[in-house]
Length: 143
Image 1 (cartoon, rainbow, N blue to C red):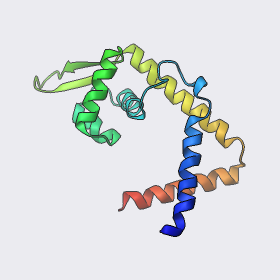
Image 2: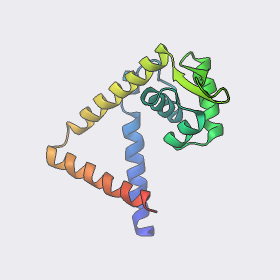
Image 3: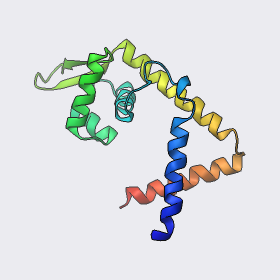
Image 4: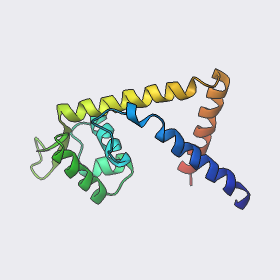
């Protein structure tokens, strides 16, 4: 394990550098938002009408964290809460037009960024990289 630490640190530094690439091109609605907020936006774009606990589970954050994120998104006009149609105790979360536009702009930005990053390596290395990441994720899921 300790033999892997220097390479692991370098990997993290490289990932951080990739995340920081071209921040100016990031959509204005998203710039400055936390990773958690972006994940919640994208989750709600794909799962409109979800309940708070479903969002928390879906994005891998605690309910209090998601609650705070939702309040911030509401304050920025990106999200609304509505009482469930058949269960008055349940509150469902929906993106506004502004929230939907921001979520989709982020998806487009991330896809363009990934294509740009992948464009510097050939197809074989692209496949190898994706395969390695799948292997790592499989190990993490099974722990």
